[in-house]
Amino acid sequence: MNKKQKHSFGTRHTFLEWIISVGIFTIISVFLLELFLAGNSLQQKAKDQGKAMVRLENIAEQLKMERDYNAALKQMGALSGWGDVKEEDSCYVIGNISTKKKENGTPVYVFYYDKDWNQTKETGIYSIVILPYQKKIAGNTVQAYQGDAYRLAGYPSVYKKNNSVDLFHLNFAAYTPIEEP
Image 1 (spheres, rainbow, N blue to C red):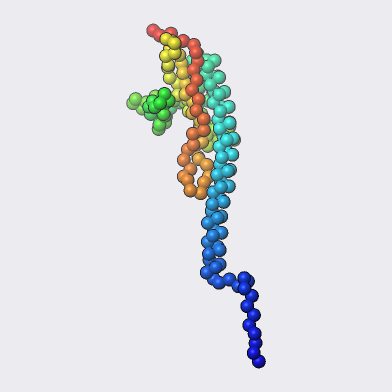
Image 2 (cartoon, helix red, strand yellow):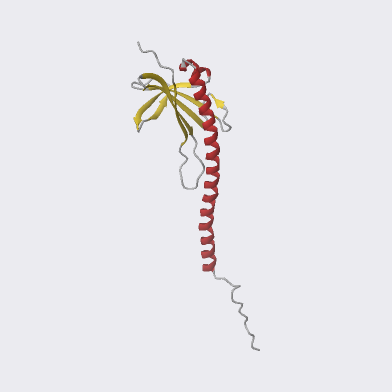
């Protein structure tokens, strides 16, 4: 008896075809995972920027009402420190903040916040750094401030490191002339 062998084309796959299929699926999966993480990170960053803006503007309004910014910042719960500050493009870049007074250091004030933007006394997920400085405007010296809000932990990503992220930047001044001696 002669048995006929049936071949059903399209239903039997070789081992190589399975490896190629799994490889293509893996590459596409990694790409899609990065897209989902990027979308989630963008949404979280937008929320964080909104909250940082509100917090920083509240601090700005309170500081503009006070004559003694040191007392006002301490009353608001800011931690004082010293930072390495340099001026670039009409903006101050603050590096390495320390609680110990540094030679050639500039006083800065730091607010820390937890994941829900509640103020904490220790390093949290978010921080707002206030740099007070004096500025000449229309022949008068006024007390000016630079405020920077950061997310210290970064956002999740497949490829990138979780470095801190600059969320919001605000320059403001109390337009009350400072009496010069």
